[in-house]
Structures are given as C-alpha cells and as structure tokens.
Amino acid sequence: MAFYIPHLTFACMTESLFLNLSPICFQGDEEDIVIVSLVVDENSKTEFVRKVNRLVVLLSRARLGLYILGNTGYFEGNKGLPRHWAITFDLLQSPATNDSAVDAGNIKVFEGLQTGTELPLCCPLHRNVTFSAKSHIDLKLGYCVEVCQDKLACGHECSFPCHWPRKDHRQHCPVEIDSSCKSHPGKVACHLAFLRCRGAPQDTKYSEIMRYYECPVVCSITLPCSHTVDKPCHEARLISDGKHQMPQCNKKSPIPYTFSTCGHSKSVTCAELVLYNSDPAIVRCEENDVFIPPCGHERALKCWKKTRIEERKESFNCNRERLVKLPRCGHEQTVQCSTADRIEKWVGVSC
Image (tube, rainbow, N blue to C red):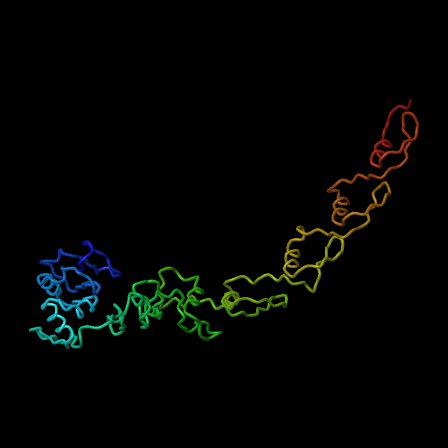
C-alpha cells in the first residue's frame, strides 16, 4: 500500500507469491501481509496522511502482518501531527501484546518493540536464518549460509550454500564413493565415477550403476611376443577374460621377416611379422638386386620386380643401346636393345 504510485501487481520470485501495490483502491480489500510506504520528508505539507479515515484503512487491511516504511522524523518532529497518529506511534513504540482470542499454539508471536531502523528478514527456505536490512543494498541473495539439501541426479545432496530461488544446483558431485574395481579398491569422486560408467543402459538405477564402472588405473599386459603394453584396468580385464582381442604389438620384432623367394630379410614390428607370415603376398621385397636379361646388359632392379620378370609375370624391355646391321641395306645403326632384338629376328629379302 502506498500513497503516490499507481495500482500495480508484481509476480515475486516465488511462483505463488504476488505483491499488490495500491494507492487508494484498498478499501474493502484485505491481504495476509501488507507493506505500507509513508516515505515523506519533514517539510512535507501533504494532507493525505493527516486524514483519520486513511489511517483506519491503512491499519485494518492486514490479516497476519503489517509493515510500515517511512520517515519517522516527519511524525515525531511535527507538532501539528493529528492525535490519531500520535496514538498510533505510542502503540508501535511499546512492546507488542497478543490480542488474539485464539490460542496461537506453536506459532511465534512477536512481542518486542515494533519500530526501528532495521527490517528483520529470513530465508524463504530456511526460516531459522535471519538478517537485518537497513537499506535496499542489504536486500540481496547470498546471506543464507545453510547447505542446500536438494538431491542431485546421483542421489547426493547439492551441498552448495543456499542459492534460493535459483535452481542451478551443483553440476559435479564431490562426494567420494567406493570404487567397484576389486583390483584397485579406493575412493573416487561421484561425478568422475558416473562419467566412467559409459556402458550403463539409460534406465539403470543409480544404486546399480557402479556395476558398469570402468577403472582407469593403467595396467601392463604381456603380449605373446613377450613385449608389454599399457591399458586401462577395465580394458585389461576384458582382454584377460577373452572378451576383447589381444592388442597388436607395434614394437620392433626381435626376429626379422624373411622372404621365402629370395632369402632377403626385412625389419618389421611384431604385428607386421604375424601378418606377413599369414599372407606373404601382401609384402614385397624392396632390396636392390642385379638382373641380367638375354641381351647381357646388367640392370639394378627391386627384388620383387626381378622375381616377377623371371616368373614371366611381367615383361622387361632393355633401354640400353647397341650397334646392329640393318638387314635390307647392310648399314650399321645404333638403336635401343629391345629394337635391336626385333631387327635381328627379321626375315626377308635384302636390297
């Protein structure tokens, strides 16, 4: 209730609380809590607050609580203050009494002085946490230090300091829980444990999700080649149980791969040695070797290419030159070796 603002209705920070701010349209209406603004300075000449009927309306609208905010200097220092205001201030500055005809029971009734320079407020969620507001600067969130007890998805409490009315609960639960790994017992932060349960079905209960915990501790596995490889514990367990294949060894094999066709050897990894022994056709010998074609000209070739030519799987044309006698005219001419072979095989009539 105020004297100089239009009628307004504001939604407050809770979903069910509304503030009804009204200057003169409150006759006949009531509210559980009424906040009255009488903010005027000592020199104000307004007649509005002097009218007794306005005071009657002001004091009779609240069912449970009435809060009056204003300048006490205007009322205490004003010699021309009407008698009804003087009586009201005398009552407000005296200890309060319970004038209810009904027993209040466990409801606490305020019995102290009803005036002051501070307004006692409490946390809407934790009513035992109170503080005093002297100005609008004090009306801010963060004064409540009670721990938020709302449950996170994992079932643990949020444990942040009270952050009402915001719902931004703790994202990473720090509670330490027991690791389900029998090889590496210990504690692990709750949010890390849940991140490492990637194989859990979506409908898995949180009380059972640790069955899918993937222990990240690094373990050493001995491979058939005698080399070792490091793997996370959960992967090593699957390998030892035969549920996953043994990893390939990419370290240098102590035994080179030997080509059966030429006898040359090749330095390989252990994984390559197993692969080449199972399928020799997929690897070629890259050693340089000497090839002597029928023309007698030596040529350095890769071993695999020489083998293909010797097995007649590939043709070879010698690009060296030699002197031949042309069959028709008898003149000598220098040509490529492959051309010379065709000339020498020519059969016909000379000029």
